[in-house]
Image (cartoon, rainbow, N blue to C red; front, side, top):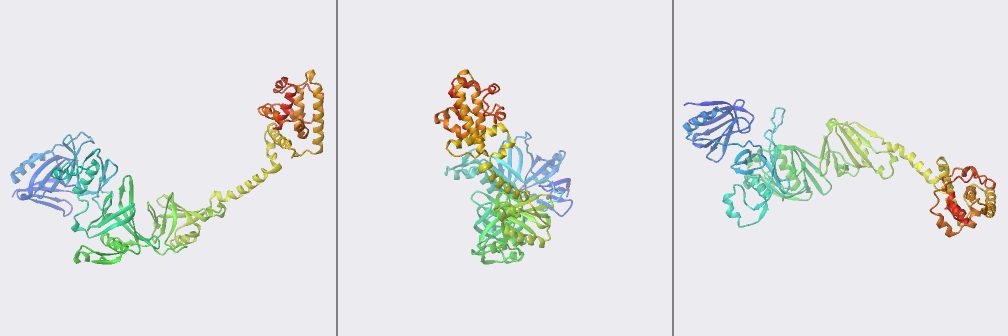
Length: 625
């Protein structure tokens, strides 16, 4: 019997290279390293195709059970030899399939057996094996996301890159039940006439063809309406021999037991228990990825269950029973432990001040429970965070000082500095828990440090300064801090404030006593003198003399000549007063009436020319305001 051999051939998507042989009895492929081998009988071979792929050319062989086998790595020169051998031994023709090289991302999807083909101009652009689809989710109203199970269970440096997700944009609507290959179903479903989005129809067809979830006969055990906190919702949990399936109203997830990294069974409170699955490959909802599945069970809820397994199959698993009549959380955790072959991590010996195995804390804006376990620090919330004790470099406690105030002193912060370089800070931890947390970390031989915040040292002196400021701002201490500023502006503002108090008849709060009163009476005599001499054109000097009188605290005499109506007119004219700088020099010369010549300098004096009595009163009332 003549046998033809081709070297450097790959089987399917496997990275292992091997040898491909053809004989009259059939075909076979055997890996060069290992015992892996694929054999096909001549009677089972029905068709063959030749197609260009990434690894040179591919021989695709169809079998009578509607399955197919693919072999990559052939070169162009092998085409004629293969065509001749297939015709000679199996009486089949080697069909050549055209591939699209346009690079377009817009085309048509076609379900071809166990493959999803993407066609551009009726030529195949790429194909996806539906048997590798782990999950199908609607990422948006018009987007469908397909996630793929990884080939290699244990990643290593030599592991090749693998595609784990692809998204399809499927716009529009269509009648329910129609698909690219739903021809036979078309007549049955057309009666419904219900229109759904094309994305939903594509999603449903992928789930059906990819067999996300096996037949009911393969289900070992099913739990209905399980309360899942992360991702939030109620899901039916179906347990299969190799994977579990979460079925919700919107999302379906297929999770391989091999992708489960850890199992946690933690008491939330006196009424509820949390069962948490840590995943190596996160599941996703839209743009959000979830690395942990958090299920919540009631302590009092019990279940009676019988596993759909034989006694021989049950004996292969550790501590698995045929029948259960226990609390639900014990049954679920026990089945998961046996099928995933992972140990369950419990709460440990830590207890808070209230006797709980966790303490309340916040991570950024998310509130949750901080569990201090034997080998881990586990923060359980909407987005759980796990820290291994072996990865902690140092723990820093902050905001422990009493100087932070009554409110802040009730809580403190815990910062975990990891050896990998990232820092995780938990805030709003009750201050009463500091002692027990510190004791726990010291028992685990973790370095701890108390950090004094800058505010704890500064807040005390600041409070004293504020008290002194409040005292200084009351009573007669107001003018004192203003002496360091503008002498002219500040002094006039203060005097205006005091003058308004004199209008009501109350005595002034200034430091002037009897001498101030004498000066005020002299100023009133100056007014009488100036009225007699105004006809001689000396009105310019009069406002200057009355302004110094106010600086001498002569508000008592001025109040006699002030009227309510002139005060209103004087309101818009306080601005010219700060300009003359000679007022401070002339403040002590109120009694000198022979010096009118040096005082015509101020700019507001021309306003006094319109009226003899007006300028005098306006100037006085302006300062009084």
